[in-house]
Amino acid sequence: MIAFLIYAAAVQDFILIHTRTTGILFAAFAAAFALLVYGLALVPFPLFVNRFMRYLGIISFSGYIDHFFVLDRIEPTINYVQQHFMLSPVVDFVVFCLAGLLTTVGVATATYHWIEKPGIALGKKWISYVDAKTAALSVKHAS
Image (tube, rainbow, N blue to C red):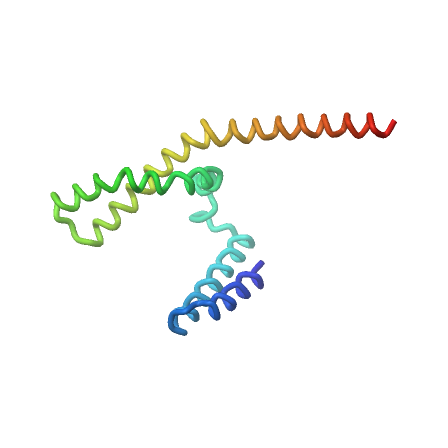
C-alpha cells in the first residue's frame, strides 16, 4: 500500500504540468500521508482513531455525495455573515469550514439512514433473489 502511494506520487510528479517543485511537494505529501496511515495502523492514536472518526467513516460516502449541495446552500448565509460582520479572512474561512462540516455531517447522517442503508438492504435482497434464480436455473439445466 505504501509502495503504491509512493509510486502514484512519483507518476503524478511526471504528469504535472506545473513546476517541478509542485510535483516534489506532492510526492512528499503523499509519502507523509502514507507514513501517517501506516503509523496509525500500528499504533491507533486516539485523536484520529475514535468513535466519532469511525462514525464519519460510516457516513463518508453520503457526506461525499451531499457536501456540494450543502456548500451551495450555506454559501448565501456565509456571504451575509462576511458582509455584515466584517470578520478577518481567516475567521471567515474557519466559519465557512465549520458550518460546511457540521451541516454536511447532519445531512449525511440523514441521507445515510434514510437513503443509503435502505438502498444497501434492497441491493442485498435483489442479489439474493438473482442468486436464487440463477441457482434454480442451473439445477434445472443440470438435470
